[in-house]
Length: 401
Image 1 (tube, rainbow, N blue to C red):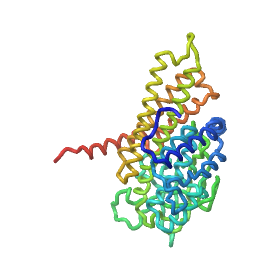
Image 2 (cartoon, helix red, strand yellow):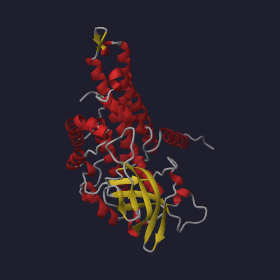
Image 3 (cartoon, rainbow, N blue to C red):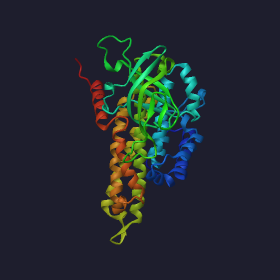
Image 4 (cartoon, one colour):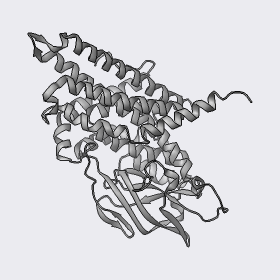
């Protein structure tokens, strides 16, 4: 393990967990990741290995069968997994966000029903906010939940579900207008529904269709899907928290934590890109010496390493702030923004160091080059992060009067 991206102040248990995950990544993920990614094949054996390690329940409280660990521990594990193959970290992260939302906002019955099975990896989670026409404008969603007796009927089309096919529980955000006064702000008339389904594609239950995997440039292996609801019936006790109108706040809480994990993914991919670049630079010779001895390459390596270190430090700080019980939307936005931008830059520099071979599918950097752009978009685009950061800074530094 190199000098970069070390984390001071960890407990013995945290160090042991992260070390175990790193060893698993080196042995079980890195050797097969590129082959599976090129086939766009779901990493069944890898996911099963992570389940056996307890990763699906890492932050779920011990009373529900989880490990009860901190967001920092989780983020460091995500960083290690993304270093091996970012798609696998997406499978875990999406599951984790749903578990976090249940832990924070679910009724006691909902927590008792779902969390033990989620901790064991028997129930896999996905969450759904986005729709085909709205992108980052969550307040403009059109999917609706209409009360029908003691339950609801959901109708609408959702987009970009990670784990859409493999999941058995989806947290779906819909608009519910009942009981709200005329002129209510859009974000106050949204509800999160807990939709249980069978894994798979096609019509997975009456009124619910998962059409199939979206063919993507990168971030392959993991199933990213649409979700189509046409009169999907959901019982009233599957409204997250038992109250309508709270969905926007619940989802934003989940995404805020998710942004720390997207930052961790950026850190992990950047670390791997640096490892590949610094290794190749010492093996490849030009003009009678390794290219690592050319100043132009040393400058690139220096910049890459500095970016890896800076992104990791910001990500760790954002996780620790959330763990302390403080609001961390500013720090999470900064971490996600910086880590995703730096990840893209470090990957590109490693690609350049590889020269023509970086363009070959035989080299791992080709896969990373296609994966990095997803981080600029996932959990809120870079532009959205800048908006959040700017608004929060103006709140913090508002002039008196």
